[in-house]
Length: 400
Image 1 (cartoon, rainbow, N blue to C red):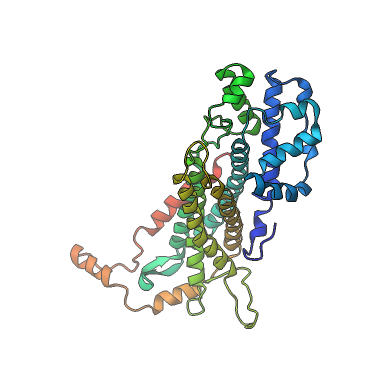
Image 2 (cartoon, rainbow, N blue to C red):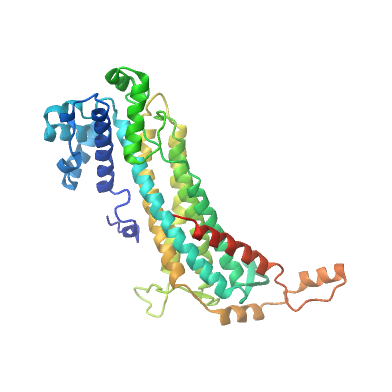
């Protein structure tokens, strides 16, 4: 995919693309049909490799039909039946509804996105560990509310960045296994129960489909959309962490500060002397866009009605895709930013030395305790840094 209005979108590759979503929908139909055959509900002659009869060239036709039917599943099922025929056409999709296919395909695409983001965060942790170990005691001015505050270290700043990434990774890791959706027309498994002859057998079909797709077995959740909002919130938490890093780098790379430089700074169309912190700018863009997208998922969830929502469900699809792709792109951009980030420790020390009197707090503490003013005033920074580094090392040592 490409998107001229979202620079870096190509980093997301095929994640949540039309191609991957179509493949996911076909995989759902294939898994359900296979479950029907394996449980002897459908004859063995119904089995078919559905992916072999559908190609990306069908996307345009399906997209046109989606406006007529409200989603692309109706057209997909008709296309599959026409191209397979006989027993496959007879049993294909029986017991499912369009929402089952769309929701399960969304989960498959979301799973791929979350896996890609998690992989990038592992790379980011490794880079942040390196930066923090290298610069843990390099003097740096800490600023609060944009003003000079107290002495600190470069390592303390990067340790804060590392904490944000670790927290984001924990949030993604705490998501429940993504669920299958196979409730039938109104989420009661009525058609599947009729096909199999019992409620237990109908539920077994759903569970078998989940297993085939590597998803979690689940009760139907047609208008209970918490898993969608939880995915959105996890992606926003990642963007929050990266936005913090990008904001610090963009600020630190200002000409008058000069503490950070991006490894591959961008140019200007008219000012050849400039080295713009383009990665930081793009990451910040994603971080600013992500929360409203997740809020849209919450609005859709809160607007769910009846046993299938009239528009709220539809509003999720493009919103979740945009949020997922922008998060995936920002993940890669953050890894690139940290990998190439240059820290000017001399400039950082100079900025600290040039700041006006920063010892007022230290002197007041000395007056209270009666102890003389110490030559250094970075408190427990080294201990705090080591605590974060230990957490990161444990995380990186975990089996993937």
